[in-house]
Length: 437
Image (cartoon, rainbow, N blue to C red; front, side, top):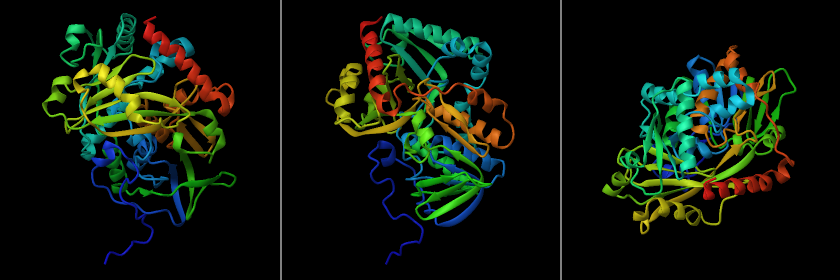
């Protein structure tokens, strides 16, 4: 007879997470629920991309770290996204220079490729099986978008990344067998992977280095009134010298100021049934693809020969009535060959967006750090920010301060009106995309 292990959550692994990632996840242990009073040098809230990045960074330095996760490792957007390594930020370096000046843009550009490099280093160092593939494309549907991609290539070259190639319509067909696009850019430092399996590999490496990770341990209270921050869950508490808050869109109202700085946004993803040879015919080079629309579509092959296709957003974080109905029309426009293909998985994931579309990191107090709001470009940026948080906690603040000093404007209209106002703005930009102006 099976005996329940005290302190372990007994639900089936990733039950209720209807994603292809969960269905194809590597084996992972069910980790204990936090019980009783615990002590650590650093406590991290959230076992997603940012939380595990900073936790592993600190564990590699020999620092005692506890991570608290409300569900399971990678449960939120970190384990549900398109799995694309897109370098840089949700705003181009030229836009950031216009906003903040050349010195800030130069500093941001100097670290813009580091996140993807961290992923590749950790995959190699810890032997993480996550189907990592190099190479990614930005594609244009209009001549105006193509000019924008050509300008992007020039901006990256000015910041030291000279490896991006501009492709005309015919050259693009070697990578994407679709008639929708007029051209694109090929970036060898982009790529794609299985994000949940990457996170599971990071979690295993963190624990091998002595880190402690508790799942199903939702934080209900943060007390920063004493000499050390204290974090409370339903069954336990952690007292630490330093607290790092990485709950992002899944933090809830535990820290109201943080939740007021971001807006939850849901994005939708589907995967087809296995397509056999057709998947390789549609995407011959196995590069991932992201289009240049304001509300963009993105897609790639999976390791088992499916097409994973995502796009569409809902401001406020609600799920659409039908993910398939929202995504299938774009998929069929891109690949009419798939009009009869079965979609075996369809899901939503919620990310956090800031008004500036730039990630926010900083301090709530001398001992409480936070990071959130990667605004749809979190796969690589979170790895970088985890490293910068680790540096700051260890006393090296220079690179952390570049991001922490960026302005963090709140959404106009507050939490009540942020979603409808953003929806109006997106409708305007969507109309411009359709008109090609």
